[in-house]
Length: 424
Figure 1 (tube, rainbow, N blue to C red):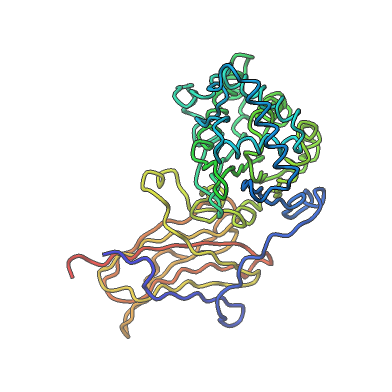
Figure 2 (cartoon, helix red, strand yellow):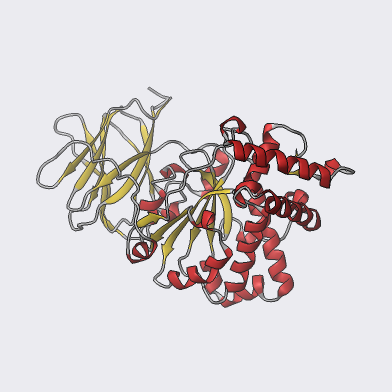
């Protein structure tokens, strides 16, 4: 029998005495872009996802949509089936077609001529590039899967999340193997498009549905100079052919030189694209990602609970979030554990740098507390704890995180499963 929620549980936080539940994580706040680089999290400015209900469009936008349909129909009068993207006929007159056409219109501020030009160029590129069949190709980048660019989980609003991390290319041998010449660069770009197309495949393309992705880019150890050419190619290709496909771009582990890097690729981005940015300095990855993504969907290397080995097991088990103030110790008490039961838990604190321990406290008087995991200092980059314990008698498990030596508030998460003994 499995029990994930019914076992009594309490959290205690203390400075000199125990208090109630830790306070909830703070809401995201806004600061200037440069201020963010000096420390903090910001959006520049806040971005609200678009509406795709035609009935709610302004009259000028409805008119632009109809004009684009008419001009597109005229362009494909002899071959209407060629006007198709992601298996959706653009001249079909349904909601899905409207969603795609509105993306091109918004990318060009509802200038119909510019939107049509962009759309026709994109259709030509997809045909030449073979984008519609790219998911069937084996491009030979197995070593990069789950490391450089990969789709994993969803944000709190249901958007698929694409993670990008290019720090591995600080290794010159790896860099040469992937970007050593023009042909290798073209192959990498093709693979990068393949990853994006995987994410787009799960989008709804319907009003009120999930019609865009979240991108999380890890800038830690990224070789800025060496990747300049590849970065510009990727940015240009995605902006020209995947308009309004990204609801939010989150940059984590942003180093001090990012302002220079930003000025380098900024000319390739529209103001609308830049409005979706979220910037987080190095060491604040968990604090930033928890604002948008649940911890069970965040990879363990970024302060979450999601491990690659978990993916074949279906949707991740939900976790509970809490905040540890500077100078506090928090005890998570999981009560009601019966004799012979096995408890399995995961716990993580973003940017640990504190003490962690776990102990089992029996209910019976005279029984001794068992130190399941002795108190130890957790390093800043350590991943989530995953452990289990089988009790010989009834009692409670106490997971402790001690932040009394720090003044910094930290985000954290945990989850547990209790399996009762089948022999009882």
